[in-house]
Length: 227
Image (cartoon, rainbow, N blue to C red; front, top):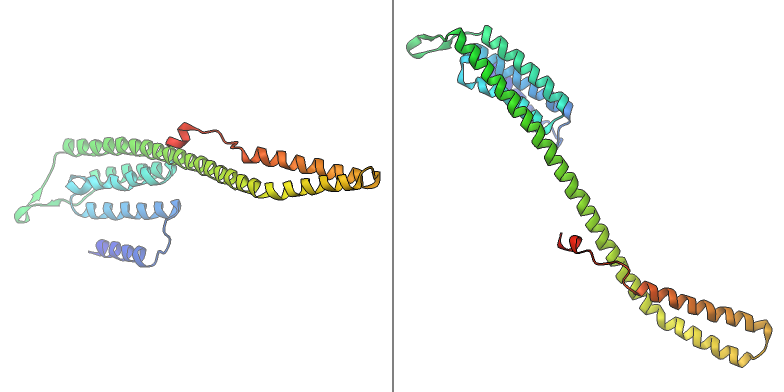
């Protein structure tokens, strides 16, 4: 009862006092180790490894292999194996029906101990593999989304540049016509003629730049479009 009560208090503290959305690796590993110790104590009082619920001993390590670091998973794995060994050797008898006591041969207990360890290693290995592949897929999707977002951004900038080029075309044409008329009126006045020629040439240059901007510079990418 004491062990169950302490476990209840721990869960209530985690539920109402912990405000973090995601626990750090260190804190999560401490909570998993505590769960492992608590389950070990309960199994010690109720038959040890012969208790059918002893299979739950592998749960903290499996959870760690999926969500936490490999170092934490290895530590939890060794602790689980050590606790299972202790439960195989030291435990109170499993209560039977009508106050009797059920006893199991040592060979059975050793076999059950080895079977749980095999399951622990097997599931932890695939948990680590699946977690790594899931992380790589997530990273790939995030990078692809960044590329697509950049393509959309460039496409949007191209459209804005084309609109700006179209809007600036009329003022530049007006400046060019006005400069040409001024050049005709001034005639051979060298003092102002060079400035007007420079103004006309720069206006033409601006027009050419705007024409290049107004053209669609981004080539269509069928792969990115389909994605």
